[in-house]
Structures are given as C-alpha cells and as structure tokens.
Length: 423
Image (tube, rainbow, N blue to C red):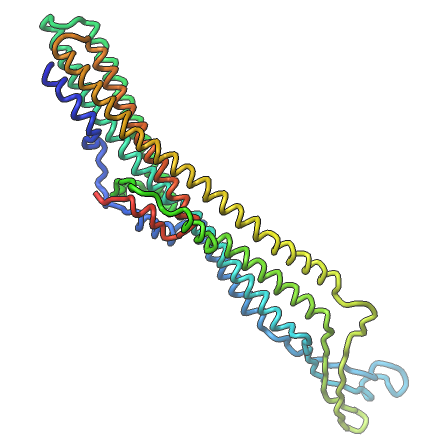
C-alpha cells in the first residue's frame, strides 16, 4: 500500500497522463482549422454566392437601353378606296431611349456599392465563423486536458482500491476502507467517461465549423501557455476602426449616397428619338420619318423617392457612432474577462495550488505512518484534482477572451496563436 500512496502526489501534481482514448488521426493546428472553416463553412459558401449575384447585377447595371423596332400599317381594311390592302401605307421605325442625368453611371455606382456591401457582409460573416472556430478549437484543447486530468486520478483510484483490498485480506485495514476506495474508484471512472464524452462533443462541434460530421480524421495538436504580459489595451482600441463591422457601415453609407444620386438622376426626363421609312402603296414612293418624345413634367419629378433616399442616408451616417460604441463595449468586456481570468490563474498558481499540494503531501505522509485514515487521503486527493480543474477553467476563460479580442482587432488571430504550443 505504501508504494501506491507514494505515487498519489506526483501523479496528481503533474496532472498528466496518457489519455485512454487514442485517436489515430493527423494533428490539426489552429491555422489549418481556420483555413478549413474559411473554405468549407456552409454559411460562407452561401455568402460567396450572394457576392457572385451582386457581381452579376453590376454587369446588368452597365447595360444601355436597347432600341425598339416599330412596324405600323395604315389605310387598309376600310371602306371605299381604302378597302382591302390597295391603299395600305407602312412605316418601319427604330426608337432609341436616351438616358439623361447620368442614370447609367449612377446605376453602376449603386450596383458597385451593393457588391461592396456583399463583400463586406462576407467579411463580417467570415470573422464570426473564424471566431467560433477558434473558440471551438480551444474548447477541444481544454477537453483534451480535462481528460488527462481524469486519467491520473482513475489510475490512482484503481491502484488504491487494489492495495486496500490487499490490506483488508491481510487484516491491516477494515472493510470500510475498501468500500470507500471502491466508491472513489466508481466516481473516478464516471468522471473519466464524462470527460471522454465532452471531448467527443467538442471535436464534433469543431468539425461542424467546416461542414464535416467526421471527427476521427483529426486531433488537435496544441496545448497552451498563457503569456506573462497582457497586450496593450490602447493599441487594441486603435485597431477597432478596421473591424469588418465598421467597414460595412462605411460601405452602407456609400450605398445610401449612391441610391440618393440615382434618385436624383431619375428626376431628369429621358428622351426617346426615332427614325424610319414610310412606304406609300399608291405610287410606291418612300419618305424618311423622324421624331422625338419627351415627358412633360407637370409636377416635381421623383421628389418623394429623393426625400426617402436622403433620410436613409442621414440615418446610416448616424449609426456610425453607435457601431463604434458597440465595438468598444465588446472590447472592454473581453478585456475585463481577460484580466479577471489572468488574476484567477495567477492566484491559483501562486497560493491555492501550492497550499493544496502541500496539504496533500502532509496527509499522504501521515497516512503512511498510520496517523490518518484513508478517507483523509482521498479528500486531499479530491481537493487537489479540484484545484487543477479550477485552474484549467480559468486558463480556458483567458484563452477564449483572447479569441474575442482577436476577432475585434485582427482577423489573423495573432494573440490566440501566440499562446498555442505544438506538442
């Protein structure tokens, strides 16, 4: 029994053991996971089609009005000399609408703004997908570590139960100690199975971000190490201006301005010119005919649409400040979570973890000398495992806060990548 008890401390303090669930799969880093999501995420595929559709509308907006061909017949199927087709006259005429006020250029400007808006929505959807993918990746890393944390207690519980059974057989321990050891073993097995299930769920959630249901084709290859210093909050604030949400709002303003210009152009009447040939049946003569048509504006043209477009533009301009405030609030919240998690990690590492390890070592030593019962050793073991779990939870909160900050400030996720270490 003494040999097994000596092994309790080092195994738990290290918190490391080979996982009982082995995935025969290729290692997957965060960069590759983000690349898979970029190229295969279903929502991004849909968004790319919207961008292609907007590109087609740009092409269509540049088309000029097509001419029309009119053919008319006169003076036939009447009475007297106009009965039948003897006096028929025919006219063949081509008509062309000439747009005035720069309508074609204004249509192109609005269509281009809509294409830019589609691209902006794609960029915004992309950063949303990448942030979710990075978070899922970190949660998978954490799930691996939680599984490792359950492996050492499980093995120690198995060894403890075996050793106590042997002591009971030799008469050196009571059956109550064996029962307690079996309870601890049952709990350790349950916790290990739960950690295995959480890992499978985390892997499936990560794979779903690139539209896959297969979870056996990869395994995360990284652990993390938290930085000793936090990034500059001032520098992070300056990067918010480049966020896709902010850029999309600027594009929206450009689009509303282009829509206003188009409505103003539509207030200018177009001219239709026509030219053709008239054929006279009576003497087989022909003559040129020509003309033009222009609407008569009895009232102000398109003023209602112009006023509506002007109001939409003013509204879009006013939302810029709201978007900027929303981004700053989001960054502030992520920053507070980062600082809080960092403080928790430091406190656990500096105070709680060493004290719990020391207490566990003292209890273990006392048990070896017969001064304390096994139940005290098991309680100390559970306390040490709980501290390791709490530390992992705080580190996970720190890492996911970094993802949120990266999503707001830099779409390459440099802060998140910096804490990941390849195994």
